[in-house]
Length: 205
Image 1: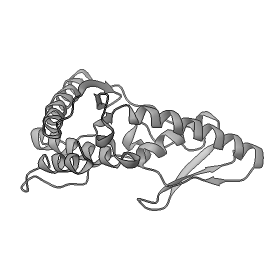
Image 2: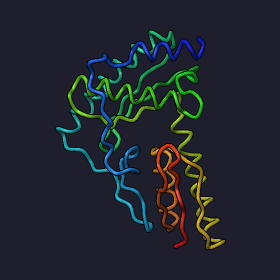
Image 3: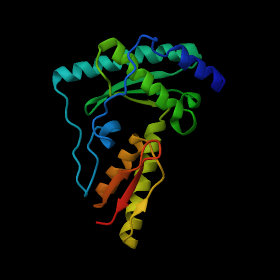
Image 4: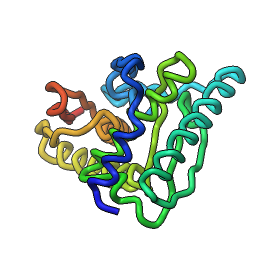
């Protein structure tokens, strides 16, 4: 299936015009896509363990998301299995399959769009904003490994030179991973700039 066909399938599953268009409240900037506060000065707070009631809500989010994504796969004529889990205080849904690159897109752009539409589908069904995390074809998992390595190498460079380093612009999900790697190395990092050019800056200890 062509990329344009996939985009058409995504368009077909966009929320109704009457659906509430909102900017999802992600909490703190870097905690938005990994469930922990932004690292600074080598300190960070991990994700909170959800209560039993909250766990039920998150599992419901996953079910709603799975139904929505199954519809997308049908329209796009793509094969994929949908896995659901709860990670920290968010639902985590993954589409696993052999040929899902078109649903990921360049640098994960289509994936990000599908994730936002899936969150809106949850909002329509529950009336509550969702922080659900979607992965397709293992893209986020692979990207997490790459960025962890980047953060570690950057920390080594900063320790060696004693000079701050600015990284390329990244999404909140990507910045969070780098912040965690920098904190694990005992250094301080912060984000600067405005989206979509917001980037991580790594400082000496």
